[in-house]
Image 1 (cartoon, rainbow, N blue to C red):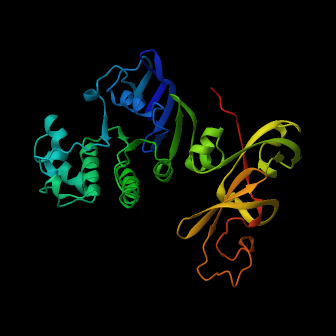
Image 2 (image 1 turned 120 degrees about the vertical axis):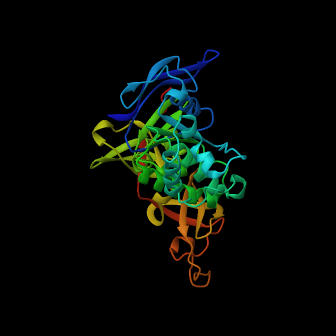
Image 3 (image 1 turned 180 degrees about the horizontal axis):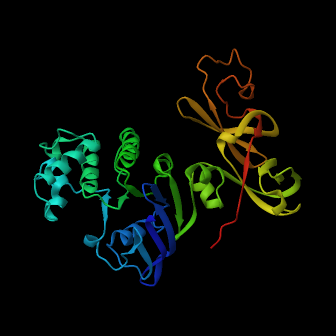
Length: 364
């Protein structure tokens, strides 16, 4: 039985659909992320799952039970919002135990459950602290403990890391994943941050214009996106239109403005002359060999690696390369020598593409 099952969920505002026929299932104990750009309907979906909005159509099932018409207080879900809403006049322990107190759970059971929840989020001994005395990451953990102490069937998280700086966000991503595994609680995480969703999740569903357009394990979505939008939204990708010129085993060779590219595909599904679109990831582009020639037109220094935009017959491909701090212009002759000498704008380089991805046109 799935912890959460959604079938045909629909919600409109003033006649405009915000969520259009959403269906998904989340197994018990899974970390599931719903991602997409602002305005795609992901937060509206979460609010319907939480019981804060009533859908116009469709069903929400928790552990096989239809809860579509139940208000939030009668659902076995808890929600952690971006604004943590910790009560400043209560201690950490009182914040965590607030829901238990309202439900009539009395000491010593309430105290033990609060202690267990704080231990789970590595805040044992913090119960007597005031929320104002905690760091941002610690307040995030208190909010998680408060949501988990009630043992929800599904924990809903609405952009809880959005306001954190990069270092703290990376730290909390690891903590969220650890807490999810240790508690064996089903997490449904809503965000526009692709990186955090991809790093934490068992399954990612990408939304656009109120619909789920692609769902699956993060690695599968990145390496085999089903549409141009998904290819571009999940990481960097250059999209190129082209024509199938021949089959190459299970793959096809596509003629593009940048040059011929071999793309992973079910070759039997494509005929010579078909017009297709391929996506090229920066990490698939290599310096030297490969038969593509271009000119470096822009450079971005990224610390331990550099990115160069290379103009290949009017199409820009991005290539990444780790920096070799020992390399200098004196011991390397050009960027395509592979020694780590810095890229130079105006330099001519040769490129190869290890793997292009065949993607479908958008379906509206």
